Length: 461
Image (cartoon, rainbow, N blue to C red; front, side, top):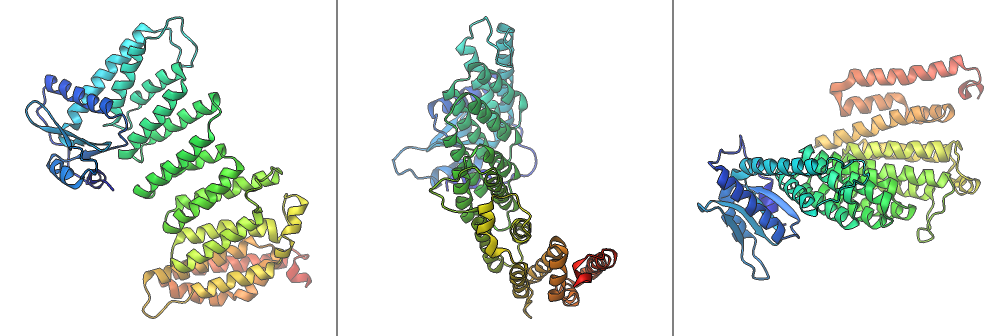
């Protein structure tokens, strides 16, 4: 990890310090900034650095190639930028004047662009006027400067869309994906940056056929950003959005590839949600009798069984993680609905393959065994053990309500509600009234099912 990456996430309290930079210096500041961006087109990371850290950056980022650290100063000797090995550091002292000057230049470029080409239609209809590349280039250059210090400035993103929509050149669209990735390097949760990427990908999908490689790289980018930016909902939403563009083979590959990451981030709900989405997509495609690639000789029921086993392994290894128990609810619900009750729209041969698993008793016994193994609270218990016992017990309460009536009653008999109540009160005594209410509801619903419905299995057996 680079020294810039280590420093750029440091929090500085209060507002950025006021810097006495006049209009002439502000113009010089912007020119130097743009010169760095043009001279090093391979910059892949941007960070904001306190002026006192420039020396540390130079010392902590030795170069194997023998290159010299590049600290850019204004005429008065003030260090404002640091550029080395395709990393760019911007002094926090100059963020405000740099933003104001870049914004002023961008608005002037946009005004000139619109003034000269008022006939330009933002929907993409060609204008009778031939566009001047220099004016378009100025809009892209100045909006780039603005967005590298202010990631959510919508006008800047829209100005870039205006030019890209007019040009619709594949090389420009690929460059735009690289640029938005650069913005995300310092603002990984920027809503505008993620939305802009999706806009670009949609444009590529509508005009060009080389999309699958881009989808793969996008998924890798999300994983890289998620590693640095924990619980990044926007990044994972983007990855979920990509699933609709994946082939069946890519979905299977993604499901397998994301397993390692999920196993190392068991508290991150977003990654498990991503896996659930891919499982649902694969299920839907199977129901539509879409062919699965021969290189992935695996069936949907095998996928679910492997996911259940893997989830159980994680539950036992990482004690008290709610995300794992919620993931198990999703998997168990599918297992009950599609493979245990026989209520499925899958083709006949799929039903035949899963007939060996069509046994409520086996599944119930396995889940009860899991409950027993997770409900043990050692004398020198940590809070995680109590959380594990609570999650396992509430999972069983939830599971009771998902079974058909006959299986639900059988599970209640095996479970013994009184024992479950004692477990819940022992694991979390502060919520005893909540447990009493839930258990009373479970017992009452069973009573009405047997009394009101004369054909209920409990009354006919």
